[in-house]
Length: 316
Ligand code: NDP
Image: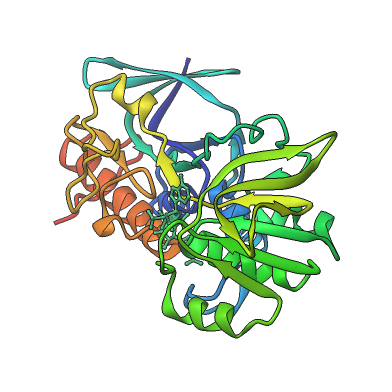
């Protein structure tokens, strides 16, 4: 069993930012994740992260990882299968190791919601995608639709509009809830047609996607012929593993945290899209801030209890 002061679970924006601060505080820690960058790898255009006017999600992930490695850090690629309490400590079991740690920062983020329409599962990877940046290239000069009306759908549609022959957005309300700056760009783009007040009821094809069925006729037909469907309808928090040690969640399944990112379990902190923090404004900049605050809180917690592995002067 490996002993640590801190185990950071998850390696998205919140986890990497937490680890960068833990490295600078010289805390004996490990960051465990199965994908560097988490959902940021599937982010489309990022144009609101201070310091970068416009950058693709995967390129920004690379910048985070470069910064981590510059400080001597790394992501331990592994998957956490179990968390248990042992006195005031935690036992974190992964595929490869068992860690005993005084504290945890839980940053498992969120997963893409599925539509639940017939054909969605059948055609995943054969015309159904949840990531415009990752899969857009395969739809060059094709006709595609993006489902959803939030920032993910808007940024996805803008990326795809540069590649595809024709891009539809299918939105269930009569407005887009995305940032106004994205709405302006979408409505000005001649390659994008927004179909409002409409739901996709089925995705159909033979070996790959060929059409979607709509609950309301569009140009006189309930069938829209296309080659690909990008489903960008929001996220659900991955809090289940934290709940196994008694961490409290709200009615939406988000981990309840205080302003110092502490949960109801002493020594167990959470950060990023999985929490109620930052007024649930889920941005990379807020997830990163929460990760940083969580590390600072862990540092103060360990110091106050004289529990740091290294000799540190107590903080006020
Ligand atoms: P959101 O929850 O913000 O939006 C989801 C959209 O999908 C809404 O338009 C919603 O409609 C629609 N929707 C939900 N369920 C269905 C369904 N079953 N059928 C059809 N439509 C559906 O999710 P996002 O993924 O867009 O964003 C999540 C968070 O990530 C937000 O905080 C966002 O700001 C952030 N983000 C930031 C980005 C950036 O800054 N670059 C990029 C992407 C995301 P309705 O309104 O009717 O519920």
